[in-house]
Image (tube, rainbow, N blue to C red; front, side):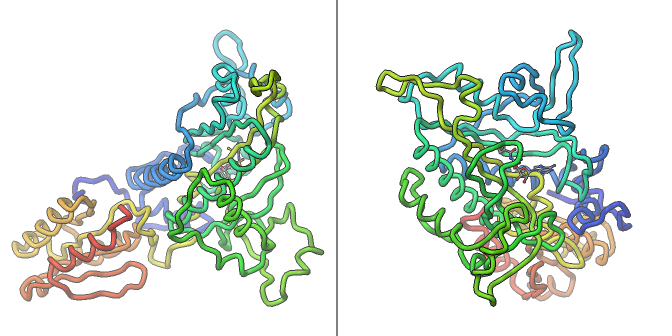
Length: 446
Ligand code: 5CA
């Protein structure tokens, strides 16, 4: 993409309404624009990152054996009356009537809808196990929407629902989700720690929240610092392997790690003194096993193969996809702007032409642009007729992890500068070697 032809409305001034850095940078980098309280328009750069996160979520869900589909955002109240949640859900549910006076709502989550699809089409244990999921906009009429996409009213969520014959099978689905979520966050350059959580209005006995540690997080968390040393890394996971998924789940959840809602001071006291941590975290996902809470009232039953009809064991599992943008920025920025991890960056590399209009600089930049594009990567080429300072400022703010700077002196000597946004370190290299480096960096990522 050539910046002269892109739509990147970078703000010069600091937006006053932003209380936390991710909100401020998302506004300044021209990623989002507030449409009304807690509701955002996704401008091209923000949309691009959002799509990348969605892709990673999809890839990891499909890898775990889960099946994507899509539900409507507007739902009839009838189903929610059947499950008994319509009255209880309260003010967070946005309710409306259609022209015939029928009660409708904007989905805040979708247990009922998925259970309804299931009961309409599945009647035998032979069709189990089954996990369906979607990535779809949700609406929750939060009292205090704040911090930009972090606590929105309209937000993008991946929500998945497992249907299993037995509790044991459903707990395998729970573990499978836990493992796939850990992979998902790591690919996004994030460490999200699974913590024992409170089940809230979804209900259920087993639930973990995934928290990204950040000072601006809304949850207070208590944990054993050794938990941050456990990584998924490159391990080979067989998602059908019950014992393996169980072992990984235990490895990641046996140390003390809880949010304030489930914190037990007596238990925390047993954590080695040097490892005790109290911090803040951003909740980027939550998994639940809730058994037959929805399948019973909604009549989602299957033939169990022994002549019986039994309600299925279910769980639901969510990732806050739009919130993740905020979480990634909170975890990865400096005072000049965002620093995207390679796995989610909107463009792979910035090409900064220091002297647009100079024949040699233009030709060298164009050539690099063409070659990187031909290698299957997406460069953002700043070909605008702007001062170098403005160009550097834009690149730093939007946070592409790598930059190639093309200047008149370098071009004369056959070199360009390759700079890491994270470390600020630069190297003078021939354009060919710089391109090779970029291709190498993204091998296996892009
Ligand atoms: N049905 C279950 C799982 S599918 C569910 O709704 N879970 S949840 O309430 O925990 O939401 C899933 C994730 O959505 C949360 O972990 C959080 O990351 C994200 N989320 C929840 N509320 C908001 C909000 N107001 N703004 C942005 N993201 C949110």
